[in-house]
Image (tube, rainbow, N blue to C red; front, side, top):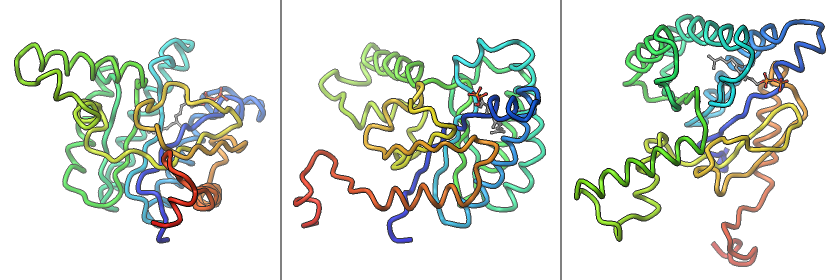
Length: 240
Ligand code: FPP
């Protein structure tokens, strides 16, 4: 418990393949994925993780067949509306990152309501990445910094890593120390490109609809068995 990551980020992958393996439609997989979201949020709260980021929809996912995109948007709106009272009761604070302007109005409203209702909560911060991509975020940060320089609010020489991070959508959260991707794909897929610089990456074969508390614990144990050197030598780390 002493070496828990503060922030865990998860790429929830494999819903479609899991559904196909059951002889079902891809949306069936996404609906089952929501059960895993609930289980993992419960487990993270119980274990004492402070920040949990879930990659729910990438900017690239807009190019999926229209029926799947519409189905996912409906699922997000329904799930958020249904789960907010329970999340609120459990002191969980909800936050959303991504190009939220692209979302349908109904989804925008559900997100704004959920954020407002849970804003004062002090337990787990649950960050949902929706219509998110790391490159989009980096370009937006560059634009916002350029704007501040153009306005005279910032000097070029004052731009450093701290200033850059302050212009990201994740400015209120620490960087994840652990990133988990389910379903056997070993890629980052445009997720938190700046923030994952020193994260431990864990790839598991488990499809997201089957991911449960024990899989999270397994990943945490694997994380704790690794030596995080941040570019230093092993001897230097052991002296600290
Ligand atoms: C990736 O599996 C999953 C998604 C694109 C959607 C994830 C969404 C959920 C689990 C619902 C979560 C709901 C909330 C409110 C956070 P995939 O479709 O890429 O699967 P595949 O790689 O097997 O095709």
